Image 1: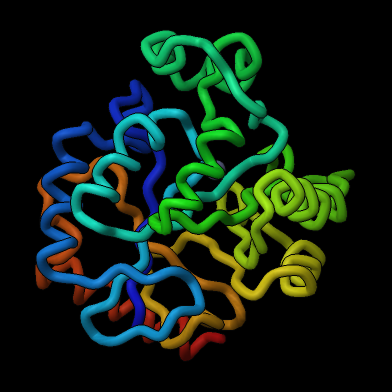
Image 2 (image 1 turned 90 degrees about the vertical axis):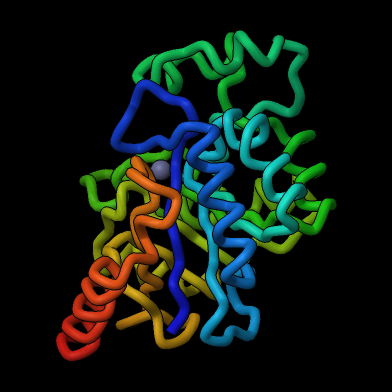
Length: 243
Ligand SMILES: [Zn+2]
């Protein structure tokens, strides 16, 4: 089984979707002591774990990327293309200053997302793999959504900008319908959702790769406590029986 953890922000006011930088430091240090991080598709063993960060906020580049280097870890970053600028000279303090609800509408004036320059640097470091997180970060099961553009168009842009093959797709909000999943499987090797279960292989369960919520940690080892682990195993078995 491969456990895959999902995180979002660092030091954000959006508390359910954030960890403090000190909590993330302690958590990643613990992971580096107990586990070996893998990218999607890599061979895994009982000590393997996969770390995924959604939305490519600038706080990832600012706080998490230095930790990946410090502890020699790998992570997958899910990027919503439409909000990614090529480069910026806006100061880090300003880029980190927005409240969560202000981020999307101010992406051009505050550059609160990683830039393509930063994404390329992180990919070239060997510590980061990139996933598409759709074009516009919208609910793909909503009516009238241009699935081709959101799912395939985003892959084309990311690959062109980064010079890098994008094999993973992370469903925004974990929301989807059959058409979205079918199209995602046409263009990507790995399609991720949420759901707090483990995965017997990189095909996930019923074709979708499950992730464990890693935001709002109460302690660095919260996810690895026996009772939590038992809960993940229980959900995994139930989902495997249902699929
Ligand atoms: Zn997201």
